[in-house]
Amino acid sequence: MILIVMGVSGAGKTLIGELLAERLGCSFVDGDVFHSAANKEKMAQGIALTDDDRWPWLASIRDAIEDKVRAGESLIVGCSALKRAYRDVLRGGAQGDGVVRFVYLKGSFDVLHERLATRGRHFFNPSLLQSQLDTLEEPGEDEAITVGIELSPPAIVDEVVARL
Image (cartoon, rainbow, N blue to C red; front, side):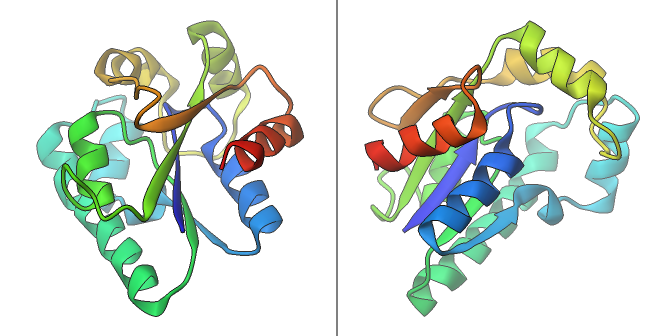
């Protein structure tokens, strides 16, 4: 199983991904590690990434997914996956390979903004939150398990595991 925990910055992708990996006994990787230095620098400067910036990043994540699938291993990835086209790349095309599933961590601007304002040591500039929300194409029920971030992290994990 490959599970991608998605949402805008501040939604809790890393925390929830790590907790899910611990609960499910598999590995976790934060999609941010696949960003180029140039992408990280742009975001640190408050410059929104373009699709051209994101395609190589998404392809790198997909390569990591394919490596795990070939090895018969499970993986949880934290990745914004803001557009359906991005999710199509991650799942292996529009039809997908049936192995990749998404969990969408949904939250309000106010909650997300507050989290970003108090988060330390991250390259993402909180001023980019609105651009991420503007880019976001929320997944439908047919595409992802949606969980509200107003729940506690353990409650979110319980909800996801129950719905898997």
